[in-house]
Length: 261
Ligand SMILES: NC(=O)c1ccc[n+]([C@@H]2O[C@H](COP(=O)([O-])OP(=O)(O)OC[C@H]3O[C@@H](n4cnc5c(N)ncnc54)[C@H](O)[C@@H]3O)[C@@H](O)[C@H]2O)c1
Image 1 (tube, helix red, strand yellow):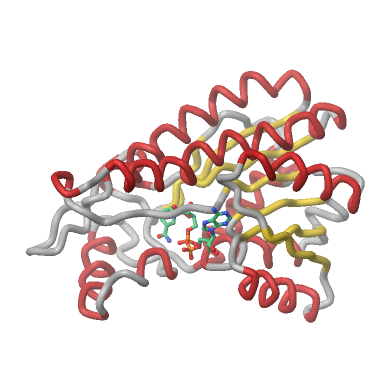
Image 2 (cartoon, protein in one colour):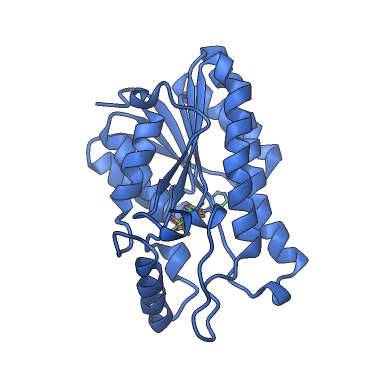
């Protein structure tokens, strides 16, 4: 058991990659806090973890609301005694050409994909510093360092606010790693390539999804999308003591994207 009795908050754990991370952590002995805005999804994920014989509970929290983060983290500590791990996973995107992106798009995406990463980390940090132990894993994206080409009239690569936020998360990771390192807190980042989840599939037609899979597969030397557990395992590594001498690092989990090689 690589996370035996560790208390782990996973934001956006109601779906996709967060759900896979939550299940993986639970299978390694963690007490998982499934933090999401979708109540039904929270119940489903907590249900699947508990029915597997592992431990989890849900918390309906909008991580963009700075006001509730304090109460949220205090409640987790009241209930579980500590917070060992935070995975800043909740994220959103807007696929829209540069010229059509509005203020609202920027605010929506930056609010969740960047500011919430900062404020969630700020809310858990005092608990981790008190413990002199903690692991923060931020989820960035391959779009934080590379780009995706446009395909026909469909603008796969159009996600300027998302790409900007995800690039900032990589630098934020280094800054937090430096500030929290002396207190025994490791801060690292994972930059996923392409994984088929509601985020990458929901706003697209089946044809666009197929096209997206083909384009994104061609961009990686492994020539395929990732399986969800192929992301959950590296996150587990960075959340565990196996990575105790790693901090400020961004691990690219993208099948070897050629645009950064
Ligand atoms: N899927 C991919 O290929 C891919 C690639 C690179 C990076 N990522 C990143 O991985 C993370 C997870 O992506 P996913 O594909 O699993 O997405 P997803 O849409 O499947 O899941 C996102 C989850 O976040 C929750 N959420 C949304 N707003 C929230 C809020 N304000 N507070 C709390 N929870 C909220 C949603 O309810 C949902 O359960 C994101 O940060 C995303 O940018 C995904």
